Length: 107
Image (cartoon, rainbow, N blue to C red; front, side, top):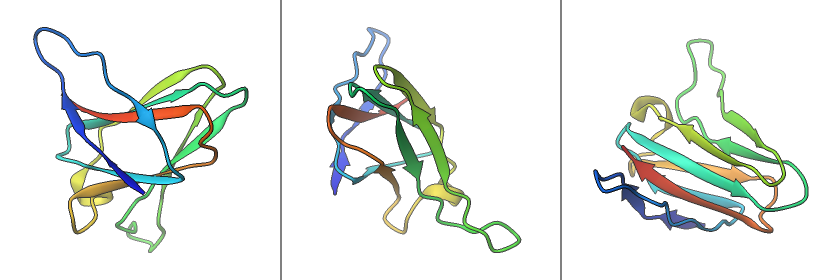
């Protein structure tokens, strides 16, 4: 597991620096942070965002986003109360990691 360095959008622009993913990664979340995922593989992958707090019925509703082959997805914002661990981090899982890169961007 690796922690992504959160990058801030600036008036002068930002080209997000994306890094190779592991099966599970994390990033600090302040409620205004997005996950950027780029899938360079030949097949679709699933990105799973771990929900920490169960709903009123006791179910854990993780978010699963499909990222088609050769495409990018910006995922978020993430509610701090629903997604942050006790360390203030969001945990992300990937169904495949070959030629997949990601990064965290704060607006």
